[in-house]
Image (spheres, rainbow, N blue to C red):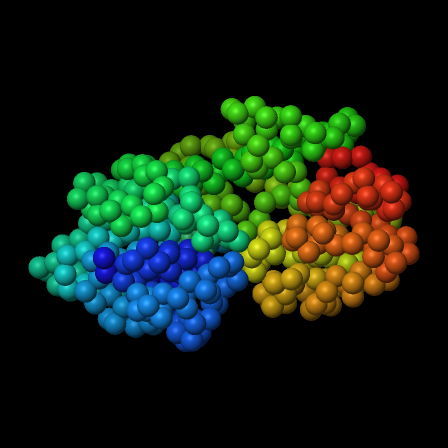
Length: 435
Ligand code: NAD
């Protein structure tokens, strides 16, 4: 199949590359000429395990192309995927301007019948709106098109794996033929396919993210209660997760969710509900709990030290989760900014995200390329992302580099037995502190 993908971000690029890998002829289009140049030279503009290898392989085999020109990218496409960003507006609603620009470009360029697939996360009803925009702006009256909603569920850091081994593929369409075509394209992935209406597909994406965010805020509230009642959140979560109705995933207590999806999508769903005159009280609390949760480590440190003024604090992990360089809505943005405002001197380490972090964090932050240098002579350590190199870092080095180390672990990721043996002062989330 001849496929075009508009937008080469985390979703569009992974989608395009994986569709090429299963044999389709794919052209990826992006308005960012720098990104396209980088991609044409075989380099990935984002860090995603396994992605660059697949880019190089599929380009060499002639199935994967990149362009910043719509006319070149859309010519003779049988299917066009839209995977541009839908970031938050100030009021929390989804900004659909990139999507609308893409729709107008499609309307301008299509010269044969085509199926248009929305991969971006969009408010319920957007498929209908895009259809109207394209219909209105179509330059060639003789061509027809059908709309499909095919929301994306990949996780950054394991995006390739998720595309090949995801739990389900949702295909929403009001056209049986278009849905069958997208089903056919996806068959080689051998992932269960569930076909719905466009509006249901759009809702499935928001409902899924809101549910996962709810699970995180719920376990974080339980962890806060555990601290007050001397229970241990690790044991509690393990015991809860053994119940199949609950499931073991997304029960890790910590400093809250971040990233490019959960914060934006929960806020957008609040607005979508509001527009439908529905007061989504539960989701409002989920968002509130998450905001509070991002402060708990700093509050613990303030209680422990009295004031953070002049303290040297090493922050380990800046990306919103391991295996990605994505800093969008990372908890570190809130935590580090607060530490600097409180007068702390911050040295920060992340294996991959430093370049992106530098653009977003206060200029007072010193970025270091290894953990040893970051923790040297620090008064305390904040762990914000559970990167393997941070989880597996030799705990004895904290003692030799810091003297009397104090660690605040926002991801409950260090080995407590070893910490006890080494007599390291250790504060985590939902568990008793070790002194
Ligand atoms: P992104 O910001 O990484 O990438 C968007 C890309 O679109 C950028 O490269 C940008 O230059 C390009 N673009 C913008 N306007 C364009 C236009 N008019 N024409 C061509 N290209 C254009 O975004 P992302 O993280 O890939 O997310 C894309 C969508 O997928 C969003 O709706 C997001 O909510 C959803 N989603 C993201 C993830 C994720 O983990 N990142 C997972 C599931 C769903």
